[in-house]
Amino acid sequence: MKKKYNRSCGIGGQAVLEGVMMKHKDTYAVAVRKPDGTIAVDREEFRGVMHSSVLKRIPFVRGIFNFVDSMILGMRTLTWSVSFYEEDGEAEKSEKPSLFARLFGDKADDVAMGLTTAVSIVIAVAVFMILPYFISSLLSGYVRNASLTAIIEGLIRILIFVLYVVGISAMKDIHRLYQYHGAEHKCINCIERGRPLTVRNVMRSSRQHKRCGTSFLLFVMFVSVILFFFIRVEDPVYRVGLRILLIPVIAGISYEIIRLAGNSNFILVRILSAPGMWLQKLTTKEPDEDMVAVAIASVEAVFDWKAYLRDTYGYEVDDSGSGAESDAPEEKTGA
Image (cartoon, rainbow, N blue to C red; front, side, top):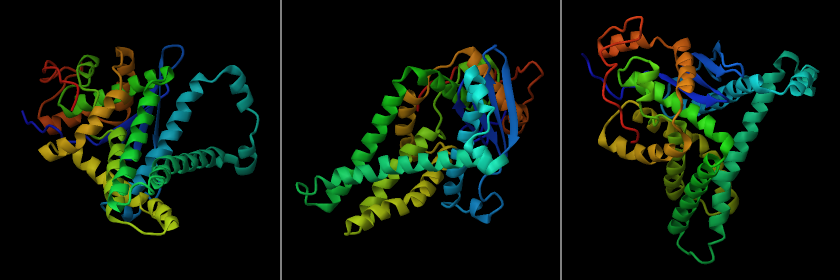
């Protein structure tokens, strides 16, 4: 049997309210456990911004557009999952034409999601990029060394991000979302480790994954520290502007690192991935079997995992889902 561990299967996803979204190439599916206990699956095409542009194939540039696409798709799928849990009063109210519906017609939902995404990005830039600069600038009267000030700013940025993650993970309402996040990772790890996608095998897989968005955001923090250390200007206004202008560069570099991490088991890559894997212990929780079943439904709507196991690992999986790797040792959780 062929062994090609740590080779990306090309699918990714995210947790939504009581469900999981999985995406493979230009197709995504959202599976949600409805209030009546059944699973609803929505499968759609998603091409994103600049889909046909050559820019989406250029290293260090493609990451910028992929990040924007993930934000847009994330809002779209989250909104769809929430619709199953709206109160009756809210559902009736939604039937009345809103201001957006009157102004933009059929494009109202797309405009609303676009504005929400834009506002989210602005808030994130303000909190994680601009705020650390202003906090570190307050220390300028005590710290005269510009290099040390840059390091302090970077440490403050990382600290704010970690505190944000810790604060969010402590919220009770987020716990189930993080369980579905764990189910998403477990499904992908199960496939990439060469195991048939069954509830039993998924439950035994790790809930941490090197291509996770949590790891990507942590790479963004680390890359920003390095860039802001070496690229400096004296004027305070230009400093703020520089931090905003370099965000696409930071996102592009971070995307290439996370992409490399998902396809390599080299020792240096494992070291770079370790902090993000540790942080995922907060942003993922162990799911139950019902949650895993939802995640599997999402995967199977967009990805032929049996063909992947045949092509990558060289064995067939029968209709029952059993295969040569079904009794493989349990994969340890962690980096």
